[in-house]
Length: 497
Ligand code: C2O
Ligand code: CU
Image (tube, rainbow, N blue to C red; front, side, top):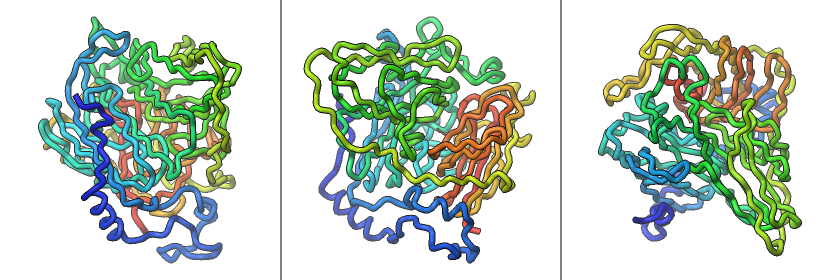
């Protein structure tokens, strides 16, 4: 059987020529740069102070290199030795869990030919990636669901370097839980010389009698923080070990692919620094202590193993709940230290301060709550509306399933407010844009980074600020997949006004 990396073929010949031709046809757009102070936006309105502060945060597009990466991706059922090594029936991309890590370089185009070998319709959503709206993988909104046996070609040029992921956006509470997820790494145009670049996908599984518990969206899951499993894995294994040499400098990319579980990974004992959150570099290197990795979130860590560390073994422990969970271990081999690659931390992004924004009214406010009713007996609502669940038929998935639509002005600053009227957790995720947390319960929270997913705690109010650069119809939803399916989904129309 071909390995994933063999499937990730770089087609140099005809495709490269076609890619260059395509690149020449792309309207050349200047990188995002706000005009001078006092200048006006495309709509003729003066630019707000917040848009001026946003200048230089991240580019409108990446400079195309002309290279096209062709990837064949297939979803289907398979039996794999996972967790403790016993065979487990799962649904997987390219026969592996996690699915293949797809790597592209910034400026390259990615063309994924997807085939659905499941008995159910599905789609592939590219979480966190700014891409053309039609490639976003939301059934009934950006595309019809891919039926069993069907194919769909996802093609886009990522605009941001960083750690992203892909997963189904239809019956995700079952499809993601059964193993359908993979990481998309967009490398910098000139990748940094880390000793190694490692991906850790965190997940949990609810196992009953040696199989994935087939009861999905139970009343218990819906009333609480979604489906929390009884087995925690990193890269599909309960005993993941990373063996390194003393002196190595590692880029460790963490993704939380669980349906509902939040992780707070403890890296103490290692000199680890967060350098990226949800893909984008942070403004400065950050201490990972206490960082809550909610479903959908990613963090990238910069870790230098001390040259004196030979023979040490370090456990990385999740401390989100009162009961600590060992996630994985980092084993430092015996022997001579390697020379640590020396380069300045890439965590030096421009992140707008957006400090004096407390008095600005939110453009949109969402109240997060639950009520009885709906298909599962409990509905999760945004402002009293529950989006209808996407059913397993193409016809009902294609009708837009009753989402509310709000408008966000393109390239203008907006504040969004999330008011959690419930006692549960809600990691709120926006497709197609990054935002910055401004405050929690009215207290300024100057996070030196952007996010695409923010954990809203019980009864908490979170304000975020954003400047959307990509037009289209984007989802806003809770990333606790059971909550989303029970209604906690909405749409944002980003358009020039
Ligand atoms: Cu990772 Cu709409 O989701
Ligand atoms: Cu939720």
